[in-house]
Image (cartoon, rainbow, N blue to C red; front, side, top):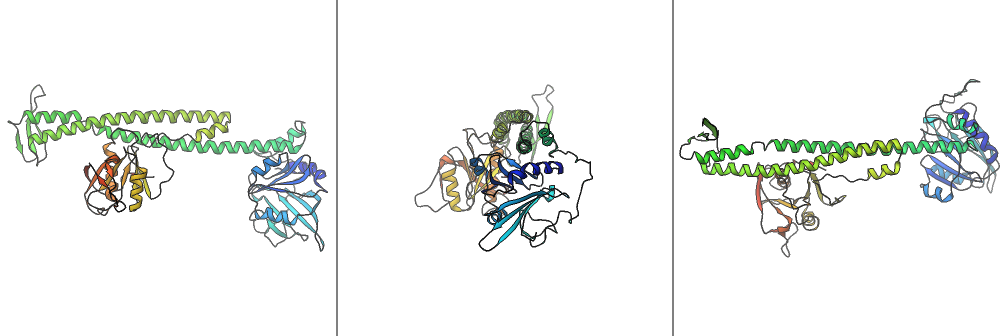
Length: 490
């Protein structure tokens, strides 16, 4: 509040409050109080918030104040105790600064005493103080600067130097100042200055709350958008690695067609390219441990695997592009809601769950005890057990039948589960990353290569009376990987 507005509000509330006794006190915020003086016009509201220090009357229902109240601070408890049975004798504003003094006369069983409540509405140094009859500070709402400490005599902020505005000058109205409500009141738009101030500050607080919500939603959407774009890039990079699928099939066919004419030297072989019009002689690299028919079968297997991978990756790319479209639409919606000032709709937008995590429609648990959480390059959630009992809980309580289960072969270690909400195959890259985690969290973690067994959870069972962590696999596959934490830790 500026100087002129404080003068005006003190002039308005002084005749209403002087001679009255303070009653119930409501702690409406860490730095805000409402005091009941049993007025028809409401409650005295005082706030020492550095950004919006203010003093005026508010009209509220008791139930609303009780609902808004928080546990009382030490200052509020002391104020309630010291002002019990007191009467407000004087209410004045200091001419030197934006400081208002409430002087109370109190009576106890032994003697009469005086107490002064200081409302220091000075921006960053805003504070509330309780003084004794000698103007010594006995309690303070906020930790005060030097020169305003408990046990010392109260002095104005700034070392006690008065800051008197020259006569005839008026304060500059800044954003958040009270020049506008004072002008509105003087223009007859409100019955009281308190009503104008209450409307003004409520609008400011609502605008701040809206800005905070908007910033939170914007940050969340930006984070999700960036994460989804990274996933799309990884998928496209992975798709590029399968671009030579047709070439693998072509080389496999040439190997079989050249079985009788091929000229081989260790891991190099010369073949006639029957697919070219001129049938030139070409040279390719092969596995030195395999025969040419075996090399041809290896090439066909690579072709088949790449074809499956391309289908899966293209499908996943389509899903991720759809997620990007949704996020982009939400960003547009966010800006529209900000322009409209719709805080309720912002709350709903803030609560929209992410569409990521492998396309899962299952609501993820907030926290699973005894489990490390990762996300694969393909967006699938990977869970890693810690101790033996955690492994049992993860495998037989948390994992679903179609989830993929992994464990280092022939070595004690963590159970690893890849969440798979559909019946589709888990991408090969995700299997590799999960297997690397299973190897890393096992007693074989120092080995260069580790065999890892993997199978859908539905092919596991627990032998009767078996120790924690021990399972039986009715069928499984094997993969050899290097131990490492390749996936992103959540």
